[in-house]
Length: 401
Ligand code: GLA
Image 1 (cartoon, rainbow, N blue to C red):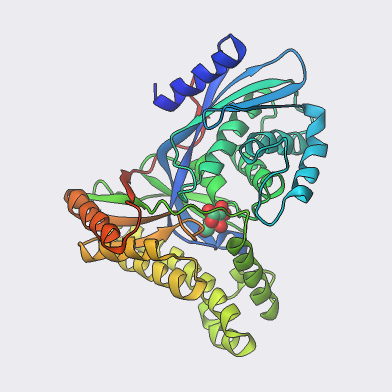
Image 2: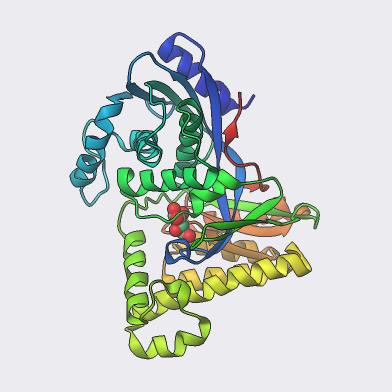
């Protein structure tokens, strides 16, 4: 049993004086390539990581939902029939800082938002009160989708206990709705799909327009390689500022091109785009359009030549995010540059940006020297020491016990 499983069970028992009816968990994710393409109906290639969020859950005799988490001493309790009123109120009460309304702390908006969205998605379910205890070993604010992991663990648990019988894609949609409408972060669906569909040794090649997903074997370990996560410890939140602005710029760019989304704009259209729009909007568009192409290229190269050959695509993706989409920060650039200088085959920031983590594709026997080089570069720049660890593609959400 993992530490998070033990912690969730213990918290459940201390809350209720009984054992949970079950334990469910869902992973965080790393995105190999395809950033800010999901809400543009484009392509992404994430994989689930071994770090998971665990929900120990038990049915109650009434119709109240109580949530507790090892992150905090507070518990939050609401009636199932109050959920509908709660989230519109919560959204209106959110200030520009993204802080949740008093009474519903932001952490509780994830599981309660999932309960709310699940009811709306499957109104025929057998809704009963539940106690939910959450513990996690997914680093928070590191760009590794700790939020999708909470959503995935809660959605999988409630889907079983409430007999709502939704499939994994529908549960991913429930998670995204909770994040968009209950938490107020205007994110796409990549993280929830990765957390739901992950499989060992495979990345998920997802078409975010159709939600058609293909598992692509990555063969990283077979090739003698490793993926190093370099968590900069610079925290980010997508319910505020930059993420939404980027999204708005993409929508503006698509409208100028007469397209319903940037999915329908190709690399060949970029010359015309440059003539039609201001420089900032054009560079946002160019990132998304070229990033979609890089995802397609990465899938092809992985299939034809293997993981060793994708390094340059990762490097090009980082440059595009740094220069055109402008979502990198000095710590992310330092991590990427130091890893490459120490021999990484490729490296890029991963996730929404403005902080969080970068990944590097490295030789298995280079984990220590690359880690040392990145740590030294952070120290030389006066940055907080990074958190460095390797990940392998892992299983998606499931019932553990
Ligand atoms: C965050 C969002 C995702 C996606 C990425 C950027 O992780 O949750 O939907 O937009 O940023 O690729």
